Length: 178
Image 1 (cartoon, rainbow, N blue to C red):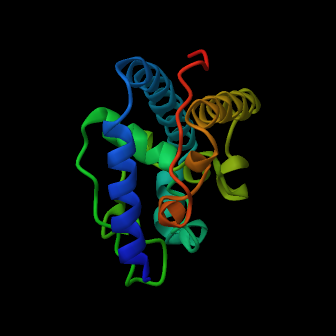
Image 2: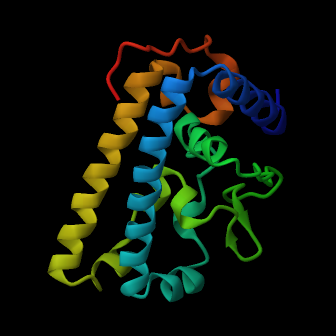
């Protein structure tokens, strides 16, 4: 099975799992999704404040070379929760399939955890000490939010969208507190 087929099958499986969620779990997902988006947007703004946009544009996305498995089920659930249209990855290109002509196909608040929490030395060195501390505190908060959703939706949702088709269906657990 090629990456496009895996993507299509994975997205379909996540859509099906999302549609089957109880109203209680959808409410919980919404709460987590809002917090996740907020953390990601703040991390992006911190990087932008240090000039990451210019640095990344000049670099050409060295850190994006191996990104095809970064988009997880949690990331896709946030998209679905928002009713956003799912983009089409470009698996035929040699770098990250989520990169388009103008950069990432996803807005900063929807990018995978690995993408929004990674800052190269060129950017990190430009952060003021308090901003660096703030960046890593928000990264820890974001990691906790992901872990909360992973626990709520069981282990299958820990994985990349491209590997969903290779795993057993997830069983959400209503008893887990939101």
